[in-house]
Image 1 (cartoon, rainbow, N blue to C red):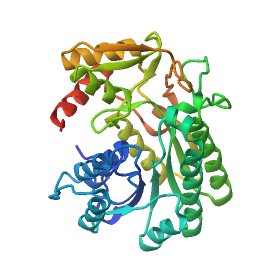
Image 2 (image 1 turned 180 degrees about the vertical axis):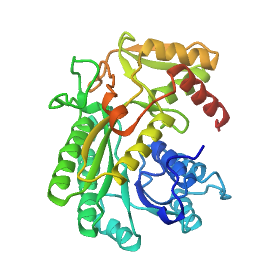
Image 3 (image 1 turned 135 degrees about the vertical axis):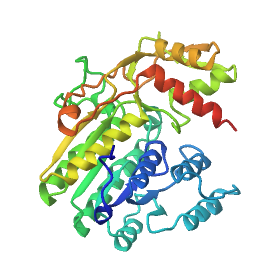
Image 4 (image 1 turned 120 degrees about the vertical axis):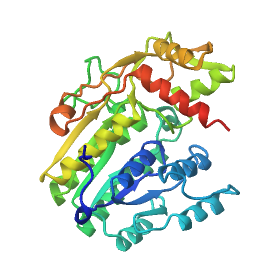
Length: 354
């Protein structure tokens, strides 16, 4: 059966993906390349987590076709940039806060559509570094829209977050809900991005879909996120930080389903005009912290040692996506339940332990 995202040779698209060496970005880049398109990957290899993980993500997205040995950060990234230059893929070592540096990329490449995934992530770190989050997530994003305006790029997919919903009591969360009460700087920057995005759509006719991701997990997941962190600690017989009574809950969404939603959003934008939409991408399956730990224990074959701690500032009690709009608008249809997704993650983790 023909993949619906693969076009014939005259319809090959040139996509700019920010954060293309991260968790979600590397999976997206891998799929876009498989589907015959060209990708410009803009990534700053920020120190939020170790650069070697992003280098490996990059290699994995290219199916490890490049022989590589690690030395030090600057040398490794510069070597990776030089090794990955081709007609179909170009890695650009670039911070989105630097508009002049971004402009050189926009001048050099013909870009059909931007998929903006780069961000400073994490609720708790944003409380400690709010001005950094503003600089990257708001100003950096606005730099991209300014360049889209200047270079006539009219299609833009932007990563937002379920964090914008805060601790609202209405469940499940719908795109039409009021999101005026974020409870972390990270969430506030993501809502600001949605608002500013509408400005650029209204003034400059940039068609845009803002995707509210709900707790994405799977192979290559960031090491600071709970499923990855807990898996490592359980496997090593160390204590896991267990916040609250275990009743907090998340709408965990497997990476393959997220990528399917991003690809379908791209397809929708390319085939329609005058678009500004906000769309939830979740699994619509809520898993409590207790259930998450139990599922990991079963997949790993070990019991967790819990270190009970109070709830932390900025944490939301529950997330749950209403995906009715995603289904009707772009044909989104998540298929991976939490048990199967967790098993796939643990298999990847065990196969990639250093």
